[in-house]
Length: 422
Ligand SMILES: NC(=O)c1ccc[n+]([C@@H]2O[C@H](COP(=O)([O-])OP(=O)(O)OC[C@H]3O[C@@H](n4cnc5c(N)ncnc54)[C@H](O)[C@@H]3O)[C@@H](O)[C@H]2O)c1
Image 1 (tube, protein in one colour):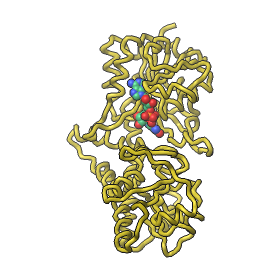
Image 2 (cartoon, helix red, strand yellow):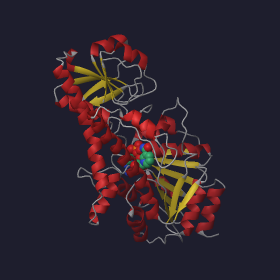
Image 3 (cartoon, protein in one colour):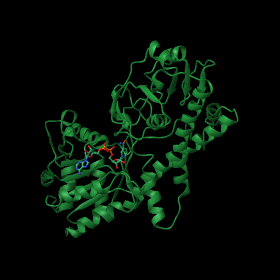
Image 4 (tube, protein in one colour):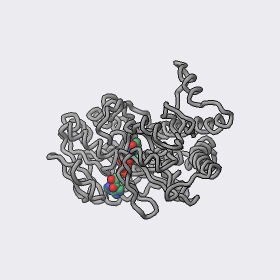
């Protein structure tokens, strides 16, 4: 059997050893699924904390040593793809990983990149690397790109999640037809439905579009929120009405801005590529501007209220409910709640917070611990901002006991004269 046939057979029969590089949100979820499928697995992470507890399994080697790549048939790369300080793609994690694997990769392996990135990356960075190392891609080495779509909600265990790794269709593109066949064989073991893209670039672009779509639509409703507030028109009711149209409309809900590891960052990968090619993707830039502006708009509304009503805050602190970037998750990356906290800090105010999923946060070199919500805390805080609408909050208690409520998520139904929608 040649390399292709051997690898196809091994994956199909679950005899392949699969190595995951980067055991973060994405990598650990994939590792878990492969462990469940009884594959021999290797988990590589440079952060020793990721090599403990939840990633452990009898058929898994957890290590930060890249030498184990030698024993892998399949390598799945799930490394971060952040932005540099000037908002251009930072592929340093991927490049660093390629450097570290240099001595250990071998003929007959399949490498899949899952990190979100701009069209062209897989071939430019990994394809070129393999060619330089004298591999003949699709003959003695195989390369695919398969963008990850899972949501960080997977980390929260006490809720049923509608879409997960298994029931979300997985896009996969091969460098060649043979690579696609191997990619499909692999991802069939992870998800129910694998959708094959005609090229690496198309698959990379599809992920970009998914994230740009969300960024632009979140910005649209947030901009409308600021305008309709001025016109004294309830945006949420208007959106609910528009949402009754069964076709041609997807409802997005306004909030305090956007957050997470993906939506605020990924569109700039495409923006950067467009700029490099003398094209201006205005929608991407404008949506980022609006999604940042809304956090300032909310802060300004609250600060103005404090000033106009001469509210005397205890220790100049407001209370922020929810610091995760969206409901029912434990992820604070790029969270708008923290940006609002930062705005308050700049204006000379401090804050306490409560979040059932985040026990502590680091803010300005201090550690803040989540407070338990009770009548006393709500009354004492005077100004309460609902930044994240976790289901675990007792909204009845909040609406009864808080002195002034600023609700950025339209979650309080029992509204008094001290309720303000922002
Ligand atoms: N988090 C999500 O929900 C999500 C969803 C879809 C796509 N993505 C994309 O998937 C990719 C990974 O995202 P994530 O959220 O899992 O990131 P993460 O930051 O949670 O995890 C990355 C892991 O890689 C490790 N790491 C860094 N450098 C390393 C190296 N050289 N070798 C080995 N390990 C190394 C880190 O220690 C970390 O554990 C990104 O491109 C992201 O945009 C993420």
